[in-house]
Image 1 (cartoon, helix red, strand yellow):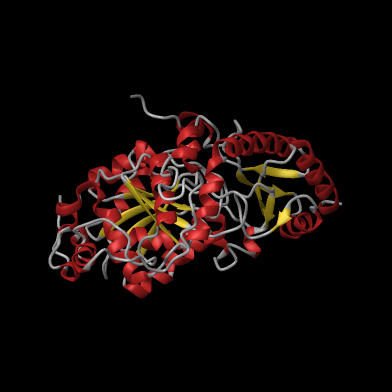
Image 2: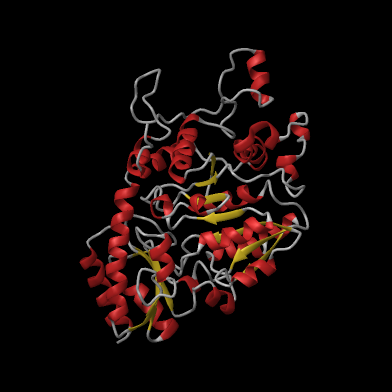
Amino acid sequence: MRGQGFDTRAIHAGAEADPATGARQVPIYQTTAYAFRDADHAARLFNLEEVGYIYSRLTNPTVAALQARVAALEGGAGAVCCSSGHAAQIMALFPLMAPGRNIVASTRLYGGTVTQFSHTIRRFGWSAKFVDFDDSEALRAAIDDDTRAVFCESISNPGGAVTDIPAVAAITDAAGVPLIVDSTLATPYLCRPIEMGATLVVHSLTKYMTGNGTVTGGVVVDSGTFDWSASDKFPSLSAPEPAYHGTVFHQTFGAMAFTFHGIAVGLRDLGMTMNPQGAHYTLMGIETLPLRMARHVENAQKVAAWLEADPRVERVTYAGLESSPWNATARRLYPKGAGALFTFAVKGGYQAAVRLVDALALFSHVANLGDARSLVIHSASTTHRQLTEEQQRAAGAAPEIVRLSVGIEDADDLIADLDQALARATA
């Protein structure tokens, strides 16, 4: 039997009619705990000898359906959902890291991620080295004996630069370390990093996957292909786990080792749990993901082209434009489009950029992206405010830059709104 298409999986993966009631939509299992059949059943669940539901900090049927759907769309072996995209990043690193270990991260990352990697993870004794991933030699040189992961975004926030994932994966494979790709802006509709060599994929489900700005959520998808036992670098997965009577996760669970560890240890101890109602909203959002992403990309291409031709604009970063240094990579690896988030510089610098944001009417000025509505923000004074100007420029969030998240409205209406705002900003 041939595999189902992406659009079909977006609706059906992980969900069947409820066997108890016949309910066709995935029910919201709003419960904290689950009754055990008997004492032996409870013991097997707690010993990881049987898969089932124990407590909703760990597992929940609504969340499990979402995990199965995202894993199916990404082509992964399994997935673990959690409370936010930032939680997903920590969940991805947690089984890999230890005090004194480091990650190598792209310089083109969301400002909050740069802060998390620059400051917060140091409290765990971890560190990060930031490298331009377009420079293969610099990336290769940054990986050392203490490196436990390499991290990048498929499409970067805020600049919309695209990463050559196969090229990066070739370097991480040779070094024997996993590649983690944040693919929030691409979604599996535009890019499936696992097929390009990524080990783990993380998403902020808050964004395009849900698509309506109602809930926060995150997910870690495991490819199931990394050999955690090939070296002694990843003892959480390749060595006996004392909390489970010496169970070796990779030996016991094979391709599902990382996923089981994420639930049995990560969610157990970190508690970054996704609530079932949030999972329900995201499941419903994913049903229309292919339709929405196609429209997002179509609108972004039109808006970016219009902005690039406008004399009041210095430059536009959208990788879908031929002028972009990442256009060739985008056409090769992201054939359905380069996403719908990008930046542009307004002539007049910082003050003109701020005036433009204040003058927009149809674009909502919010700290979010990936909504069906078009959104705008001045990154240097908000999402990337905590960075130095040098870091801001490296991340694509210079003071004169405005970030757009192009929605699914009528593109001509979006252009008209930008036109009147530019007139006021540059008067």
